[in-house]
Image (cartoon, rainbow, N blue to C red; front, side, top):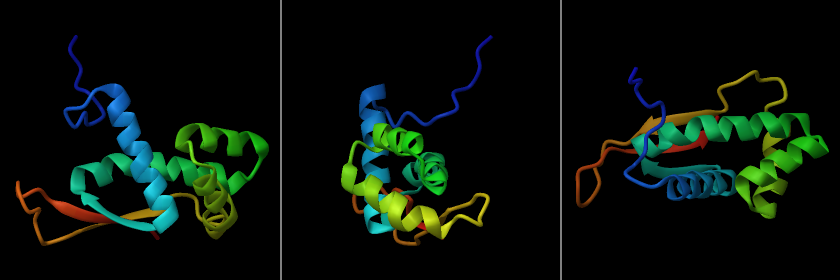
Length: 117
């Protein structure tokens, strides 16, 4: 049976797509709000929320999991020191996607902000 794919491919190979999501997540953690396309923001949301869930527990194992996903020590430090403790009482929904009205310059793509709540 042919089942539909869950994830957006963005017309990229797997390694490029993983690097794109990792880079967007790193920027989101460091800046706490980024502007990107709506499709990329929707693909980034589950990845970023899983990272915040790791940061809530603040154990060595969760730090290593976050480090293996982000590949950036500075971002992991900020994630566990400032972002994780902020959401200890919250059970989910750590990010918000706000659609922008202005379109992209070249191809009229839909733009959006993704930020922590």
